[in-house]
Length: 435
Image 1: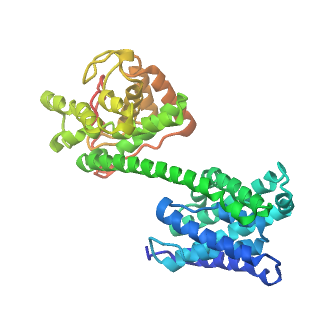
Image 2: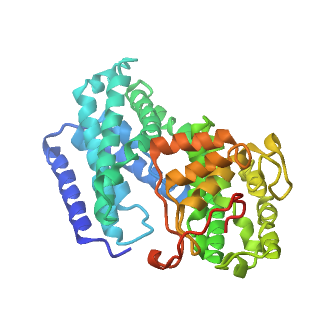
Image 3: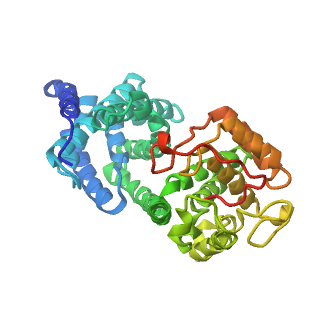
């Protein structure tokens, strides 16, 4: 990725100059340089393994340096590992300089905070639980510097508003870096103990094992996301009129699930259910999906097969769990007049009742090739009118409460410009098939 904007390059230069300023007092610093060299070599080795095997950065060694060394000396520790690390995208020199400067500033800030709060003496004396306080403050400073710098480069390189670039970065990084900080504190205490650096290195073994397990989980999660993304892209290519519909139904399903108080794992599964609810359209002829006029009874029956096609497609994907039932039953109605099996009331799986409301809501609030979008208020009124007969009233109420809290942005999903879309068609009393 050679086309990095000039202002982003200038930002990297400024951050690098800031890191150099942190290193200026080095000639006057009294530090155990053998410890600096050992920690720097240890971090470089851990970084090579982490980048190639796990992905991410191994922070315990850096935070241990912040707890053990004067701040300017601690800022030296990440430089060799960052400057000689493997880089997948170009320009490599710029990315290496950015990473080295960013980490040097973060370690320096953590070290300054730790020493200012008397953390060095607490580590030397193994003064627990007081030693946890300056260590926690140092971790917060480390996270804050990384957040500020990462948000700045995102804003400049991706032309993203600063507020959006910074949103969530600090909180997402706090938990994993907090764990790394605890490991770094254990390293520092053992380093200063009679057992010396060899005992400190033993902390890295269980930390490495736990990180490997965590990395495996993330790889599996990424594979799941890639599977779903590929299926959705296939549907979007086939049915261009509803491009983006699947993602929005997934978002609405997630909003309903959260409003109902479901745990995070179920919320994620229901998001998958919403995203994949129309995957069965891959088995429906494209001419029917893109037909502008009304469907004949025979054509409608063919389209009504898409839940069963979808269930066949996702049946072997184990991680989807109850999402598979939602794909099969999201067109069932509480009064038993839905399809494919005409289930009644509580016979319909809860996941399918959630997706049915999310699907109908987005279908009504999105502009299609054959009609304009309806206002959110009108769509909610229609859902309320059909609650009890077609939709589960509890799901409708949950969606209304969630929209009241977070709002909704209706989207145009037709390929044609909005001014060419025909006037709204009459709303049928039984909104069953969404194309």
